[in-house]
Image (tube, rainbow, N blue to C red; front, side, top):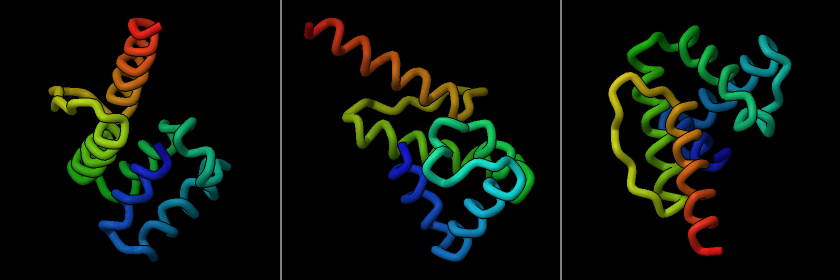
Length: 101
């Protein structure tokens, strides 16, 4: 998850990526390593720094990269945010393990 976030934020440049992580740590007390477990902080940072349109594009790109890294098919869903995509990916991965076991 952290790799998908990092790779997506690099689209904005290394300096911007660092500034986003610093903003999250300063405003939410969340280190960059904790971001995957605190998607609420990432969501709020995107919203406050970039606005709702850019937030949606960036979150969707992170979700696509996460799905790719897990070998899952990404399907765009109306009204979904990063948290919903991550929850779905988690269910899909856990479901596959249950079916295999």
